[in-house]
Length: 56
Image 1 (cartoon, rainbow, N blue to C red):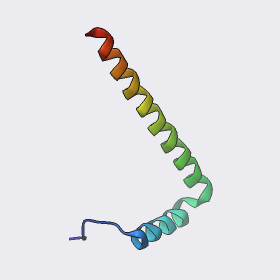
Image 2: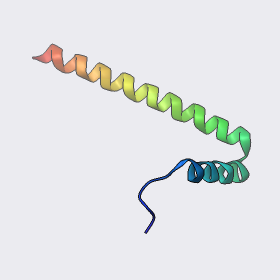
Image 3: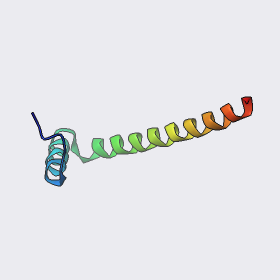
Image 4: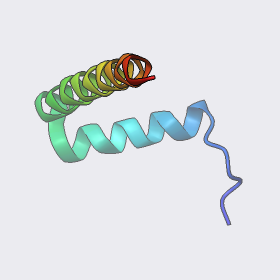
């Protein structure tokens, strides 16, 4: 249905729509929360890898 890939123009259109709907403040909070979530996930995966090595 859609080409399967999003190019730069499509991403820019989505960003503009998100800015219009949520506003810059909410979008900044969302980005901050997303970044913290990714950081916590990576930390948990790293801790899990070290934990599984200790049990061997």
